[in-house]
Image (cartoon, rainbow, N blue to C red; front, side, top):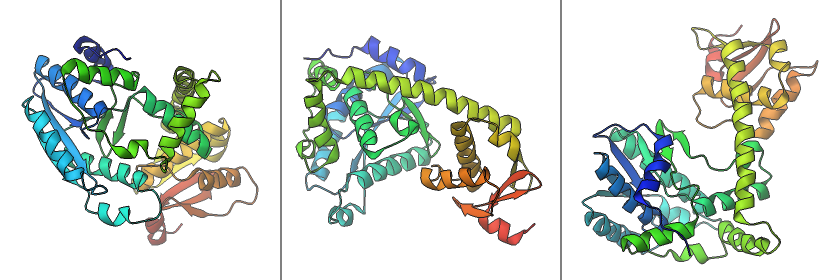
Length: 337
């Protein structure tokens, strides 16, 4: 049995994710499950106390016939708190749902894309989502199985930016049992999604595996401690990479980016890799870094004597006069050196 999250505790959980201005609108992602309904209950009470406005967004992925009806039910529940609500429809859901592979990953990306777009269109800066400690442990295990590096094993962050919108996870330190208890404390019903029990999905199988691992002493808290270690290590390396970019990278007016090759390679390998990824994202405008395997090939080539110019992430990568030069691939074709 969990412990309900109190309004004061929720205020403390949100405080480091702010600041939030009076009169500001905050969006809450609401699927109708116990997690998001607990978040909605807490968020509307918090917003009322702090003179903020709350808007709920529900995405109908069109993967289940019940999706549209569930969105209507969420709208009714939020209406009882006088919370504005909008249902967003993933138009590609029908087609994706017919594919042999699991549609969950695509649905997750579509859900965030739709909500972020709504936030941008309506000039809302912050989006609250209801990920909790059990989700964090499952995410770590899922990425461990994939062989992820440090970034992946650092799992989910309490705050991150996507498309210019801040994604906030105030409940990431609280277990699901606490969110169930929170719904009960508010007298709030919720919707049970049958896919959460379907072992065709990786997350469900990992959830069952975690239950078995607890008997061997590997419980959720130990996994979360490992995630915390990974996050601290990631923060330290990210800081070193940021210093390297700030102190050594030169951005020309034509959009070309240069960095002294020897200075770059003098840094620890992981710092160099992150610096390269940041430079490629800065030039290309991409949100996500290139695939690690492709990035590592560039890194290895930089330290060898047989360098040859190459392209990656929409960029042309060259070495000229002892400096690494990165430019847009199309731009490089128009402005060859």
